[in-house]
Length: 118
Image 1 (cartoon, rainbow, N blue to C red):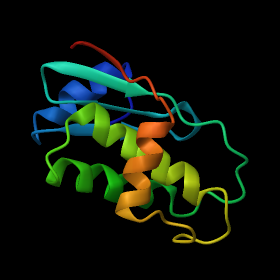
Image 2 (tube, rainbow, N blue to C red):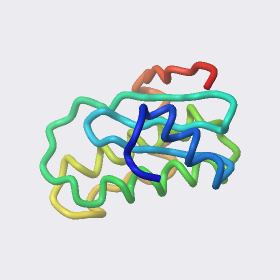
Image 3 (cartoon, rainbow, N blue to C red):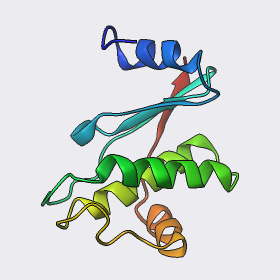
Image 4 (cartoon, helix red, strand yellow):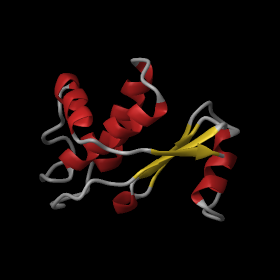
């Protein structure tokens, strides 16, 4: 697909291949679309120790959120919180939050997902 265009444009192209398209952008957060709405969420401000495993932590939490019938904004929150927790430690799977702790942390962080028509 290449890295040409805005995040919205890239997501729109990517979404033609999947029901939900997601792009993570490291310290700039993550964005997702279902082809109708565009959602974005900034990364959490944390002290980064190591970024190994951040993408996997985000992806697994996001997908688990979707599987558990959460909407895209909630799944983005889960992914952002899980990845932010992992990068605070050395190792790709250190300090992964349990599902219960992850949901609680995502609720308590008061994260604001920006949503608009694509």
